[in-house]
Image (cartoon, rainbow, N blue to C red):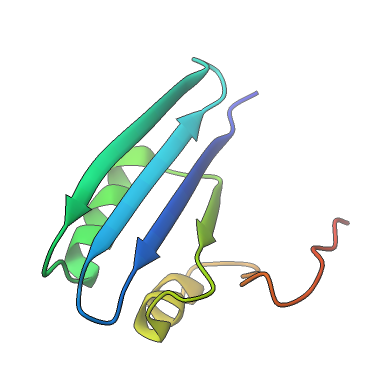
Length: 85
């Protein structure tokens, strides 16, 4: 059970919120919102947490989805029901 699930919300004005759950340790890590954050902060958080899944809000800045989709196998913005293989 090496799952790490990260949730990121980035608004168009640069406010970034992030939380991640480490299943092995049953630990939830919350981060205070960062104003004027860029994609470099998102990348730093991703490298730190090494998530197996990343959830993004449907209202998140589209730049966030574009950035994360470069390395993602699948992104689900919640527009459709998730499909599991």
